Amino acid sequence: MDHLADIDSNWLKRFRRNSLAWYGKHGRDLVWRNSNDAYRVWISEIMLQQTTVTAVVPYFERFLKRFPNIQTLAAANEEDVLKYWEGLGYYSRARNIHKTACLLVEQQGGQFPDDVAELQKLPGIGRYTAGAIASFAFNQRAPIVEANTLRLYSRLLGYAENPRSSAGQKLLWEFAEKILPQKSPGQFNQAVMDLGATVCTPKAPSCPHCPVKNCCAAFANNLQESIPVPAVRPKITHVEEASVAVGKRGKFLLVKRPEGERWAGLWDFPRFELPETNGITAGNYQELEFQLADQFGLETAIETVVTEIVHSVTRYRIRLYCLQGSVVSGRIKSNGTETAWVSPTRFEEYPLSVTGRKFATLLAGSRQHGVEQ
Image (cartoon, rainbow, N blue to C red; front, top):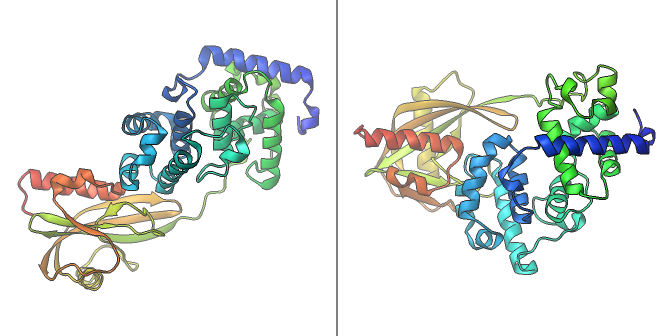
């Protein structure tokens, strides 16, 4: 089946019937599916854009406990929202959900529109998320294409080209629209998403147990392992950075990341990119001390490397050297950056980057066990 014109009414009936029957027996019992609350649907779908269902569940439950409805979310400050998003990454999404909550409370009485086009006008809500909200919360006939359905639809159609290209996206969205039933479109969308997630998996799909294998062009031609065409991975750039825990009278300097920078709105220890090196050296210590003096007006003495953390951010592979030092003299100068001297016992009160949290936990643990700061 290479073209949408090849889909006839019998194929559609069989596909819909088998998908829904399978979903009735094997659909996933997810915490955000316990109601048709648009707020719960929205938060879960934004979180699911960056990680797996299993990983999202504890974040979702913690977030909903703190912000049980859109009014609570809108009333919170951004820093509190970021704190409860901590660990999920892609913090611009957290800032966008806060903006959207404020807009809807101020302009719509806290109510979500049920129209896909209107939903897409809200910060951070794209075509898929809009379709999910309209479909799952309002039972609107709204198509959805995300990672799991992209794979399922590509295999059903036997689409051997790039499904992420403009032509591929056009075809898959048209297909998603065509297969939607008039009755219970929200449940049907959940069925095809679950099929993609649990049966039509990226590797070793469970074709013999698939309820729609007789509707699948890839299965018929034994192409399920080569369809869809894999996404092109970006070239990885290796970067070395240093994060310095500057201590003063039992407290450490934290810096709030400004707008336009990575992790904007989060707090972190002063962090600097290093020139190409093969590790941290005494020369690096002197350069970092100079940068601390230049940026913050502090004369410091860097004493030791606490740990190294290797992590990835988009196309960057970062080796982060976490160093500890102390203030020799000077006071924080005003440079437009928000700063705070924070005791390790209060680190939990601040939203930190993932690496910042790891470093903070090590420092707090050292202090707890009597290691001199």
